[in-house]
Length: 405
Image 1 (spheres, rainbow, N blue to C red):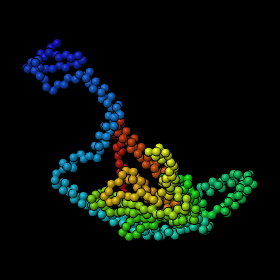
Image 2: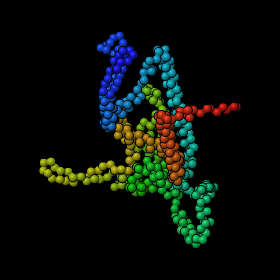
Image 3: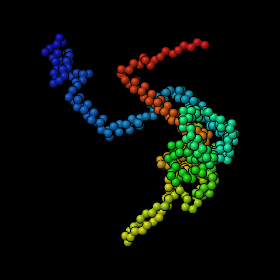
Image 4: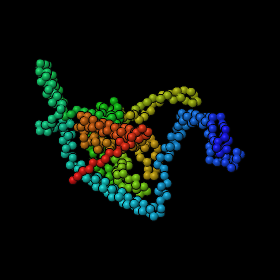
């Protein structure tokens, strides 16, 4: 078949492509025309599909994409020299800002030291009530709560069981008279916080019932930091009355990398020596192992002392690396966890102890975490909407309200 231009049609098995040869005739090469073989294209697509279903290929592809994250796009390098010169000026301003920010945090620490002394009176009253050294006054105990309202309602509803209630009340009064202060106050707090509860073993609980108070002392002067003090009543395990854990902090930008400064950071911690009574050290345990003689083939039992899981290992923290030395991942994780626990006790547990005892502070923490998760889910949902080809983007644009003063 011939078209109006006189060109012959070129037939393939599955594809017909009409080419106008023009003056050059049938034998000339034709540029710009791609002949697609559907059989080869189908085979290529099948190979791609199989490759993407291979876990090893997917893993390699993911690693490659992750390596691309954070890489420079080349935009900054392509800017004119005069613009790069101005960027250098902005970086110098940023360094000066960072230096001012460091001074700000130093003054904040001084303010913390000032108010810590003012808090001491309230914390001492709390200790006296918890230990039973002082009975709070009626005015101190005035506090309305929903629990008390529910108790009043229950008493009115259950008036028919008055005799039984009176008997139970007498038993409760006797029990209240024998109880001093608030039993297991600090142990309950530690148990209520998941991170701290995981540290407590069964053999620790009897000792922690003697924990009377936890205080924080801020380090004044050039060296920023704080010391946690755990006050114990006399017990059968050790002779110390106070166990301490100190944290050293730094609030100055690193000269080699000033832009990494994000405020004060804990750089090291140190514990204390626990004077354990004989046979009472819960941080160590004896194990028996069989040893076989290589030459004779005989075996013997050997007793060895190894570290035991215990809350009191908190007072023997891992040593941080020397300046300039590299630290392995396991030690780094241990140090990071130790710093977070110390900071949490200082910032949350000590100031709000009663709320962690009742569980109210824990509920607040859970609500905060749930809010963050919802925000994350909302962002994912927005992203999915934007990737939907049927999504109407005009719905996102809302006219701003005009507010007149």
